[in-house]
Length: 404
Image 1 (tube, rainbow, N blue to C red):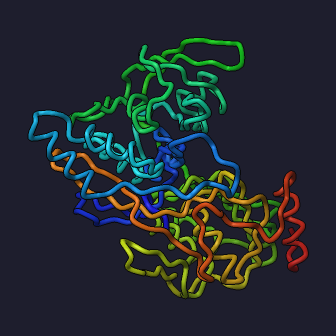
Image 2: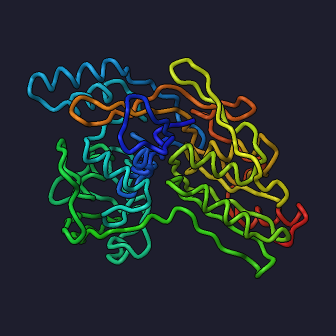
């Protein structure tokens, strides 16, 4: 599976304790490991480099865990920053999915996975040339009220240039997380100045951080009481699986289910498996390897296998989102509609370093139930649609005998 988001991460990390699929990150590509899942401030999608065409992310080299640990320990002995030394080793390895968090950054990340965080409501990604761009804006957040939009370039934060800086660092600045320190993140009400650009327009605005709740699952009924139930999942944080199971339980058997994973940046693998369990009656969800050891993930029993299901995906569907779509496709439970997915199928696991920082390092790759590799390949939909994917998905549901 993929992992920085294999979470549920334990609150106190033990060496190699949690499997994560990056949200590629929530932070990542924005942020959460993914881990930060999209970006970080909003994060789990977090590609370290330029955006990759749907389904064609190249397989990454992996950072050596022992080398990372040695570098951190030596730096600490020399009175230097262990997390910075570890980050340098990861950077030189060329592993675009591994990353290093300070203790403060990781604590902030865990809070986000628990469903709440203090920030301004922005997800960011690293675009061409190292530019930092807004990938998502949380409705009702300080950023939304200020008129910041997806695609805007974030040039600087509190006067410090953003270009070329790691997404994790940018997210940390947005949230006021101390760099290289164990101190707490900035509290609600604290200001942060953003230098932004949209086309030829450049402006500066000051936002005040606030406590925000992450809404990763949205459910709505299309067509009345007996209509289609649409479930949109943007990332897999704690409780996502339970929310989806409730939505499936309340869905009309006459309308069908539309599971929208477009733009899903990944998240906790455990929650992706719990979500799969809402649609499957047990059985294999994915296999993955950790340092050469093969493991498997299974759905719980008693999921709904009767209501017709269509899954929507696109080039922004990553990591745990791809794991879920691939499982439902291979198991014959759903028809997948849309465009090829991103192709992030590597597994990251956390290693706590001597100074309390955490290195999320790639340890393996996951495969769908039929044995398909996801990393660098992505998931190919059963029906490839360039435009109007949701309309086509509803047509497919109608053909499956629903009233959609």
